[in-house]
Image 1 (cartoon, helix red, strand yellow):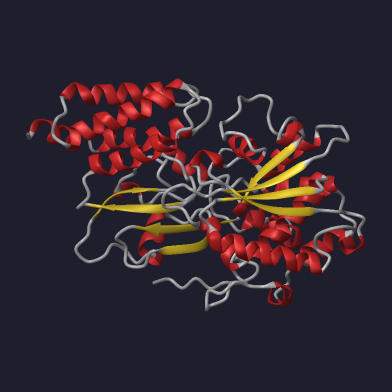
Image 2 (tube, one colour):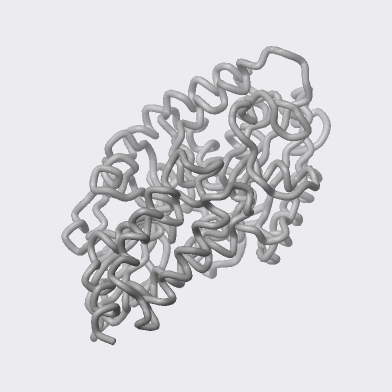
Length: 428
Protein backbone atom coordinates (compact mmCIF):
# COMPACT_ATOMS: atom_id res chain seq x y z
CA UNK A 1 0.00 0.00 0.00
CA UNK A 2 1.37 3.42 -0.97
CA UNK A 3 1.46 5.92 1.89
CA UNK A 4 -0.36 9.18 1.34
CA UNK A 5 1.73 11.70 3.32
CA UNK A 6 -0.36 14.84 3.86
CA UNK A 7 1.61 18.09 3.53
CA UNK A 8 0.38 21.70 3.12
CA UNK A 9 2.03 22.21 -0.27
CA UNK A 10 0.93 18.87 -1.75
CA UNK A 11 -2.46 18.27 -0.12
CA UNK A 12 -4.22 21.65 0.11
CA UNK A 13 -7.60 20.06 0.87
CA UNK A 14 -6.76 17.44 3.46
CA UNK A 15 -3.44 18.17 5.21
CA UNK A 16 -5.25 19.68 8.22
CA UNK A 17 -7.48 16.63 8.78
CA UNK A 18 -7.30 14.88 12.14
CA UNK A 19 -6.32 11.23 12.45
CA UNK A 20 -9.26 10.62 14.81
CA UNK A 21 -11.59 11.81 12.00
CA UNK A 22 -13.18 14.46 14.22
CA UNK A 23 -13.90 17.90 12.69
CA UNK A 24 -11.30 20.65 12.81
CA UNK A 25 -12.92 23.54 14.68
CA UNK A 26 -11.84 27.15 14.47
CA UNK A 27 -8.96 27.24 17.02
CA UNK A 28 -7.25 24.22 15.49
CA UNK A 29 -7.97 25.51 11.98
CA UNK A 30 -6.28 28.83 12.74
CA UNK A 31 -3.31 27.02 14.32
CA UNK A 32 -2.94 25.26 10.97
CA UNK A 33 -2.81 28.45 8.84
CA UNK A 34 -6.59 28.73 8.73
CA UNK A 35 -7.97 32.08 7.53
CA UNK A 36 -4.42 33.20 6.60
CA UNK A 37 -5.47 33.43 2.95
CA UNK A 38 -8.47 35.58 3.88
CA UNK A 39 -6.23 37.90 5.91
CA UNK A 40 -3.78 38.03 2.99
CA UNK A 41 -6.32 39.38 0.49
CA UNK A 42 -7.27 42.21 2.84
CA UNK A 43 -3.85 43.08 4.28
CA UNK A 44 -2.21 43.02 0.84
CA UNK A 45 -5.14 44.87 -0.78
CA UNK A 46 -5.99 42.23 -3.38
CA UNK A 47 -8.64 43.58 -5.76
CA UNK A 48 -11.57 41.38 -6.88
CA UNK A 49 -10.23 41.52 -10.45
CA UNK A 50 -6.79 40.34 -9.29
CA UNK A 51 -8.30 37.35 -7.45
CA UNK A 52 -10.47 36.38 -10.44
CA UNK A 53 -7.45 36.48 -12.77
CA UNK A 54 -5.43 34.45 -10.26
CA UNK A 55 -8.10 31.74 -10.14
CA UNK A 56 -8.49 31.87 -13.92
CA UNK A 57 -4.74 31.40 -14.45
CA UNK A 58 -4.59 28.60 -11.88
CA UNK A 59 -6.63 26.38 -14.20
CA UNK A 60 -9.01 25.37 -11.40
CA UNK A 61 -11.99 23.51 -12.90
CA UNK A 62 -15.34 22.91 -11.23
CA UNK A 63 -15.31 19.75 -9.14
CA UNK A 64 -19.04 19.05 -9.36
CA UNK A 65 -18.53 16.94 -12.48
CA UNK A 66 -18.79 19.35 -15.41
CA UNK A 67 -15.19 20.58 -15.19
CA UNK A 68 -15.87 24.17 -16.31
CA UNK A 69 -13.09 26.69 -15.56
CA UNK A 70 -13.94 28.39 -12.25
CA UNK A 71 -12.18 31.70 -12.99
CA UNK A 72 -13.98 31.96 -16.33
CA UNK A 73 -17.31 31.32 -14.60
CA UNK A 74 -16.51 34.06 -12.10
CA UNK A 75 -15.57 36.51 -14.85
CA UNK A 76 -19.01 36.02 -16.46
CA UNK A 77 -20.61 37.36 -13.29
CA UNK A 78 -18.26 40.33 -13.17
CA UNK A 79 -19.03 41.18 -16.80
CA UNK A 80 -22.52 42.07 -15.58
CA UNK A 81 -21.84 45.75 -15.02
CA UNK A 82 -24.53 46.96 -12.65
CA UNK A 83 -25.19 47.54 -8.97
CA UNK A 84 -27.69 44.71 -8.48
CA UNK A 85 -27.62 42.43 -5.45
CA UNK A 86 -25.43 39.42 -6.27
CA UNK A 87 -25.46 35.95 -4.77
CA UNK A 88 -23.00 33.11 -4.34
CA UNK A 89 -24.43 29.62 -3.85
CA UNK A 90 -22.34 26.68 -2.72
CA UNK A 91 -23.79 23.54 -4.32
CA UNK A 92 -23.65 20.92 -1.56
CA UNK A 93 -26.63 18.89 -2.84
CA UNK A 94 -24.48 15.80 -3.25
CA UNK A 95 -26.78 12.95 -4.29
CA UNK A 96 -24.92 11.10 -7.07
CA UNK A 97 -24.93 7.41 -6.05
CA UNK A 98 -21.45 6.39 -4.89
CA UNK A 99 -20.33 9.95 -4.17
CA UNK A 100 -19.47 11.38 -0.76
CA UNK A 101 -16.49 13.70 -1.32
CA UNK A 102 -18.30 16.94 -0.40
CA UNK A 103 -19.64 15.34 2.76
CA UNK A 104 -16.07 14.32 3.63
CA UNK A 105 -14.92 17.96 3.39
CA UNK A 106 -17.89 19.45 5.23
CA UNK A 107 -17.68 17.01 8.13
CA UNK A 108 -13.90 16.96 8.50
CA UNK A 109 -12.84 20.55 7.81
CA UNK A 110 -15.89 22.86 7.52
CA UNK A 111 -13.89 26.08 8.02
CA UNK A 112 -11.94 25.42 4.80
CA UNK A 113 -15.21 25.66 2.88
CA UNK A 114 -16.27 28.79 4.78
CA UNK A 115 -12.93 30.51 4.10
CA UNK A 116 -13.21 29.59 0.42
CA UNK A 117 -16.75 31.03 0.28
CA UNK A 118 -15.69 34.32 1.92
CA UNK A 119 -12.77 34.84 -0.48
CA UNK A 120 -14.94 33.92 -3.48
CA UNK A 121 -17.71 36.25 -2.32
CA UNK A 122 -15.22 39.13 -2.04
CA UNK A 123 -13.94 38.44 -5.57
CA UNK A 124 -17.50 38.42 -6.90
CA UNK A 125 -18.61 41.36 -4.72
CA UNK A 126 -21.34 39.29 -3.15
CA UNK A 127 -22.83 40.17 0.25
CA UNK A 128 -25.16 37.15 0.69
CA UNK A 129 -24.14 33.53 0.20
CA UNK A 130 -25.93 30.22 0.69
CA UNK A 131 -24.81 26.64 1.18
CA UNK A 132 -27.51 24.51 -0.49
CA UNK A 133 -27.13 21.23 1.39
CA UNK A 134 -28.46 17.76 0.66
CA UNK A 135 -31.40 17.25 3.02
CA UNK A 136 -30.14 13.95 4.41
CA UNK A 137 -26.79 15.40 5.50
CA UNK A 138 -27.83 16.11 9.12
CA UNK A 139 -24.30 15.87 10.55
CA UNK A 140 -22.94 18.18 7.85
CA UNK A 141 -25.65 20.71 8.64
CA UNK A 142 -24.80 20.69 12.35
CA UNK A 143 -21.07 21.03 11.73
CA UNK A 144 -21.51 23.81 9.19
CA UNK A 145 -23.86 25.80 11.44
CA UNK A 146 -21.46 25.54 14.40
CA UNK A 147 -18.55 26.62 12.19
CA UNK A 148 -20.51 29.55 10.74
CA UNK A 149 -21.29 30.71 14.29
CA UNK A 150 -17.58 30.51 15.13
CA UNK A 151 -16.74 32.52 12.02
CA UNK A 152 -19.23 35.26 12.96
CA UNK A 153 -17.82 35.41 16.51
CA UNK A 154 -14.32 35.97 15.12
CA UNK A 155 -15.28 38.64 12.53
CA UNK A 156 -14.72 36.40 9.52
CA UNK A 157 -18.41 36.78 8.63
CA UNK A 158 -20.88 39.64 9.09
CA UNK A 159 -20.23 43.38 8.84
CA UNK A 160 -16.82 44.90 8.12
CA UNK A 161 -14.90 41.61 8.00
CA UNK A 162 -11.39 42.12 9.47
CA UNK A 163 -11.94 45.92 9.18
CA UNK A 164 -12.06 45.64 5.38
CA UNK A 165 -15.46 47.33 4.80
CA UNK A 166 -16.54 44.02 3.22
CA UNK A 167 -19.75 42.43 4.52
CA UNK A 168 -20.94 38.87 3.96
CA UNK A 169 -23.77 36.89 5.51
CA UNK A 170 -23.77 33.11 5.01
CA UNK A 171 -26.73 30.76 5.44
CA UNK A 172 -27.19 26.98 5.27
CA UNK A 173 -30.30 25.83 3.38
CA UNK A 174 -31.19 22.15 3.56
CA UNK A 175 -32.95 20.79 0.48
CA UNK A 176 -35.76 18.27 0.46
CA UNK A 177 -33.66 15.47 -0.98
CA UNK A 178 -34.07 15.60 -4.75
CA UNK A 179 -31.26 14.63 -7.12
CA UNK A 180 -32.27 17.27 -9.67
CA UNK A 181 -31.37 20.02 -7.17
CA UNK A 182 -27.74 19.33 -8.05
CA UNK A 183 -28.44 21.07 -11.38
CA UNK A 184 -27.70 24.74 -10.73
CA UNK A 185 -30.90 26.27 -12.10
CA UNK A 186 -33.11 23.65 -10.41
CA UNK A 187 -31.21 24.45 -7.21
CA UNK A 188 -31.98 28.15 -7.67
CA UNK A 189 -35.69 27.41 -8.21
CA UNK A 190 -35.72 25.28 -5.06
CA UNK A 191 -33.99 27.98 -3.01
CA UNK A 192 -36.66 30.43 -4.15
CA UNK A 193 -39.32 28.05 -2.81
CA UNK A 194 -40.44 26.82 -6.20
CA UNK A 195 -40.59 23.35 -7.73
CA UNK A 196 -37.00 22.32 -8.54
CA UNK A 197 -37.29 22.22 -12.31
CA UNK A 198 -34.25 23.24 -14.38
CA UNK A 199 -34.49 26.52 -16.28
CA UNK A 200 -33.81 26.96 -19.96
CA UNK A 201 -30.45 28.60 -20.73
CA UNK A 202 -29.81 31.33 -21.72
CA UNK A 203 -30.21 33.42 -19.65
CA UNK A 204 -27.48 31.96 -17.46
CA UNK A 205 -27.44 32.48 -13.68
CA UNK A 206 -24.54 34.94 -14.08
CA UNK A 207 -27.03 37.44 -15.52
CA UNK A 208 -30.39 36.20 -14.15
CA UNK A 209 -30.10 33.83 -11.21
CA UNK A 210 -31.48 33.75 -7.69
CA UNK A 211 -34.52 36.04 -7.48
CA UNK A 212 -33.57 37.42 -10.90
CA UNK A 213 -30.18 38.69 -9.71
CA UNK A 214 -26.63 37.82 -10.90
CA UNK A 215 -25.65 34.55 -9.23
CA UNK A 216 -22.67 32.21 -9.20
CA UNK A 217 -23.02 28.54 -8.23
CA UNK A 218 -19.88 26.58 -7.26
CA UNK A 219 -19.35 23.10 -5.85
CA UNK A 220 -18.03 22.43 -2.31
CA UNK A 221 -14.71 20.94 -3.43
CA UNK A 222 -14.18 23.77 -5.92
CA UNK A 223 -14.52 26.43 -3.22
CA UNK A 224 -12.27 24.48 -0.83
CA UNK A 225 -9.40 24.91 -3.34
CA UNK A 226 -9.53 28.72 -3.26
CA UNK A 227 -7.59 29.46 0.01
CA UNK A 228 -4.51 27.47 -1.03
CA UNK A 229 -4.38 29.09 -4.49
CA UNK A 230 -4.46 32.51 -2.82
CA UNK A 231 -1.64 31.48 -0.45
CA UNK A 232 0.72 29.70 -2.85
CA UNK A 233 -0.21 31.13 -6.28
CA UNK A 234 -1.41 29.80 -9.61
CA UNK A 235 2.00 28.44 -10.78
CA UNK A 236 2.24 26.23 -7.68
CA UNK A 237 -1.29 24.97 -8.28
CA UNK A 238 -0.59 24.14 -11.92
CA UNK A 239 2.56 22.23 -11.00
CA UNK A 240 0.72 19.99 -8.54
CA UNK A 241 -0.84 18.06 -11.40
CA UNK A 242 0.50 15.54 -13.88
CA UNK A 243 -2.80 15.47 -15.71
CA UNK A 244 -3.82 16.76 -19.12
CA UNK A 245 -5.42 20.23 -18.88
CA UNK A 246 -6.36 19.54 -15.27
CA UNK A 247 -4.62 21.56 -12.55
CA UNK A 248 -4.24 20.80 -8.86
CA UNK A 249 -5.36 17.85 -6.80
CA UNK A 250 -8.64 15.97 -6.64
CA UNK A 251 -10.46 13.88 -4.08
CA UNK A 252 -10.52 10.41 -5.64
CA UNK A 253 -11.69 7.07 -4.34
CA UNK A 254 -12.77 3.50 -5.00
CA UNK A 255 -15.79 1.61 -3.69
CA UNK A 256 -17.08 -1.89 -4.35
CA UNK A 257 -15.41 -5.21 -3.50
CA UNK A 258 -11.96 -3.70 -2.98
CA UNK A 259 -9.71 -4.36 0.02
CA UNK A 260 -9.50 -0.76 1.17
CA UNK A 261 -12.46 1.33 -0.02
CA UNK A 262 -11.95 5.01 0.68
CA UNK A 263 -11.17 8.50 -0.49
CA UNK A 264 -7.79 10.18 -0.98
CA UNK A 265 -6.54 13.56 -2.17
CA UNK A 266 -4.28 12.87 -5.15
CA UNK A 267 -2.82 14.89 -8.04
CA UNK A 268 -4.57 14.76 -11.40
CA UNK A 269 -2.69 12.41 -13.69
CA UNK A 270 -2.39 9.43 -11.35
CA UNK A 271 -3.64 6.37 -13.21
CA UNK A 272 -6.79 4.52 -12.28
CA UNK A 273 -4.67 1.39 -11.81
CA UNK A 274 -2.52 3.16 -9.20
CA UNK A 275 -5.69 4.33 -7.48
CA UNK A 276 -7.13 0.81 -7.44
CA UNK A 277 -3.98 -1.17 -6.61
CA UNK A 278 -1.88 1.20 -4.49
CA UNK A 279 -4.60 2.94 -2.48
CA UNK A 280 -7.69 0.70 -2.63
CA UNK A 281 -5.31 -2.33 -2.46
CA UNK A 282 -6.94 -4.22 -5.28
CA UNK A 283 -9.94 -6.52 -5.41
CA UNK A 284 -10.87 -8.66 -2.43
CA UNK A 285 -9.99 -12.36 -2.54
CA UNK A 286 -12.55 -14.22 -4.63
CA UNK A 287 -13.61 -11.15 -6.62
CA UNK A 288 -12.39 -10.29 -10.13
CA UNK A 289 -12.70 -6.81 -11.60
CA UNK A 290 -15.17 -6.89 -14.47
CA UNK A 291 -15.82 -3.20 -15.04
CA UNK A 292 -15.60 0.18 -13.30
CA UNK A 293 -17.14 3.62 -13.38
CA UNK A 294 -14.74 6.57 -13.02
CA UNK A 295 -16.96 9.06 -11.25
CA UNK A 296 -20.47 8.23 -10.12
CA UNK A 297 -23.50 6.36 -11.40
CA UNK A 298 -23.98 8.72 -14.37
CA UNK A 299 -20.62 7.91 -15.99
CA UNK A 300 -19.95 5.26 -18.66
CA UNK A 301 -18.60 1.86 -17.60
CA UNK A 302 -14.99 1.12 -18.49
CA UNK A 303 -13.01 -2.12 -18.56
CA UNK A 304 -9.89 -3.51 -16.89
CA UNK A 305 -7.88 -2.59 -20.02
CA UNK A 306 -8.70 1.08 -19.38
CA UNK A 307 -7.14 1.16 -15.89
CA UNK A 308 -3.89 2.73 -17.15
CA UNK A 309 -5.71 5.90 -18.16
CA UNK A 310 -4.80 9.08 -16.30
CA UNK A 311 -7.42 10.31 -13.89
CA UNK A 312 -8.16 13.73 -15.37
CA UNK A 313 -10.98 15.33 -17.32
CA UNK A 314 -9.51 15.05 -20.84
CA UNK A 315 -7.93 11.60 -20.57
CA UNK A 316 -11.11 9.93 -19.28
CA UNK A 317 -13.14 11.68 -21.99
CA UNK A 318 -10.85 10.31 -24.71
CA UNK A 319 -11.69 6.71 -23.79
CA UNK A 320 -15.42 7.36 -23.81
CA UNK A 321 -16.45 8.24 -20.28
CA UNK A 322 -16.33 11.21 -17.87
CA UNK A 323 -14.21 11.89 -14.81
CA UNK A 324 -17.38 13.00 -12.99
CA UNK A 325 -16.70 13.08 -9.27
CA UNK A 326 -13.60 10.82 -9.58
CA UNK A 327 -15.04 8.44 -6.98
CA UNK A 328 -14.75 5.15 -8.86
CA UNK A 329 -16.94 2.10 -8.41
CA UNK A 330 -15.54 -1.38 -9.03
CA UNK A 331 -17.95 -3.91 -10.58
CA UNK A 332 -16.95 -7.50 -9.90
CA UNK A 333 -17.59 -10.57 -12.05
CA UNK A 334 -20.41 -11.79 -9.78
CA UNK A 335 -22.63 -8.87 -10.80
CA UNK A 336 -24.98 -9.14 -13.77
CA UNK A 337 -24.77 -5.94 -15.79
CA UNK A 338 -28.49 -5.95 -16.69
CA UNK A 339 -29.41 -6.04 -13.00
CA UNK A 340 -26.90 -3.30 -12.20
CA UNK A 341 -28.06 -1.01 -15.00
CA UNK A 342 -31.70 -1.63 -14.06
CA UNK A 343 -30.93 -0.49 -10.51
CA UNK A 344 -29.22 2.67 -11.80
CA UNK A 345 -31.98 3.51 -14.29
CA UNK A 346 -34.68 3.04 -11.64
CA UNK A 347 -32.90 5.68 -9.55
CA UNK A 348 -32.65 8.21 -12.39
CA UNK A 349 -36.22 7.55 -13.51
CA UNK A 350 -37.47 8.20 -9.98
CA UNK A 351 -35.44 11.41 -9.71
CA UNK A 352 -36.52 12.91 -13.06
CA UNK A 353 -38.38 16.18 -12.46
CA UNK A 354 -40.68 15.37 -15.39
CA UNK A 355 -40.25 18.72 -17.12
CA UNK A 356 -39.35 17.42 -20.58
CA UNK A 357 -40.88 14.49 -22.45
CA UNK A 358 -37.75 12.48 -23.39
CA UNK A 359 -36.70 12.28 -19.74
CA UNK A 360 -40.20 11.94 -18.22
CA UNK A 361 -41.33 9.16 -20.56
CA UNK A 362 -38.06 7.76 -21.83
CA UNK A 363 -36.52 6.74 -18.51
CA UNK A 364 -39.57 4.74 -17.29
CA UNK A 365 -39.66 3.08 -20.71
CA UNK A 366 -36.02 2.06 -20.30
CA UNK A 367 -36.78 0.69 -16.83
CA UNK A 368 -39.70 -1.40 -18.13
CA UNK A 369 -37.63 -2.87 -20.96
CA UNK A 370 -34.77 -3.72 -18.60
CA UNK A 371 -37.19 -5.35 -16.14
CA UNK A 372 -38.59 -7.54 -18.90
CA UNK A 373 -35.11 -8.57 -20.03
CA UNK A 374 -33.97 -9.31 -16.47
CA UNK A 375 -37.09 -11.40 -15.85
CA UNK A 376 -36.32 -13.30 -19.08
CA UNK A 377 -39.41 -11.89 -20.79
CA UNK A 378 -37.45 -9.76 -23.23
CA UNK A 379 -37.06 -9.96 -27.00
CA UNK A 380 -34.00 -9.32 -29.15
CA UNK A 381 -35.60 -6.19 -30.63
CA UNK A 382 -35.65 -4.73 -27.08
CA UNK A 383 -31.91 -4.18 -27.38
CA UNK A 384 -32.50 -2.04 -30.47
CA UNK A 385 -35.20 -0.10 -28.55
CA UNK A 386 -32.69 0.58 -25.76
CA UNK A 387 -30.10 1.80 -28.25
CA UNK A 388 -32.69 4.08 -29.89
CA UNK A 389 -33.63 5.48 -26.49
CA UNK A 390 -29.98 6.21 -25.74
CA UNK A 391 -30.00 8.47 -28.81
CA UNK A 392 -33.36 10.06 -27.98
CA UNK A 393 -32.27 10.94 -24.44
CA UNK A 394 -28.74 11.97 -25.41
CA UNK A 395 -27.00 15.36 -25.11
CA UNK A 396 -28.96 18.27 -26.53
CA UNK A 397 -32.31 16.44 -26.51
CA UNK A 398 -33.42 17.46 -22.99
CA UNK A 399 -33.53 20.60 -20.83
CA UNK A 400 -30.80 19.49 -18.42
CA UNK A 401 -28.11 16.82 -18.13
CA UNK A 402 -30.05 14.28 -16.03
CA UNK A 403 -31.23 12.10 -18.93
CA UNK A 404 -27.95 12.29 -20.91
CA UNK A 405 -26.15 11.24 -17.71
CA UNK A 406 -28.68 8.50 -17.01
CA UNK A 407 -28.13 6.78 -20.34
CA UNK A 408 -24.33 6.75 -20.07
CA UNK A 409 -24.16 3.55 -17.96
CA UNK A 410 -26.78 1.91 -20.23
CA UNK A 411 -25.06 2.74 -23.50
CA UNK A 412 -21.68 1.57 -22.21
CA UNK A 413 -23.19 -1.66 -20.81
CA UNK A 414 -24.70 -2.34 -24.24
CA UNK A 415 -21.33 -1.59 -25.83
CA UNK A 416 -19.19 -3.84 -23.63
CA UNK A 417 -21.65 -6.39 -22.19
CA UNK A 418 -24.24 -6.86 -24.94
CA UNK A 419 -23.86 -10.61 -24.60
CA UNK A 420 -25.32 -10.48 -21.07
CA UNK A 421 -28.48 -8.83 -22.41
CA UNK A 422 -28.69 -11.42 -25.19
CA UNK A 423 -28.14 -14.35 -22.81
CA UNK A 424 -31.09 -13.31 -20.61
CA UNK A 425 -33.28 -12.95 -23.70
CA UNK A 426 -32.26 -16.21 -25.38
CA UNK A 427 -31.86 -18.50 -22.34
CA UNK A 428 -35.46 -18.56 -21.08
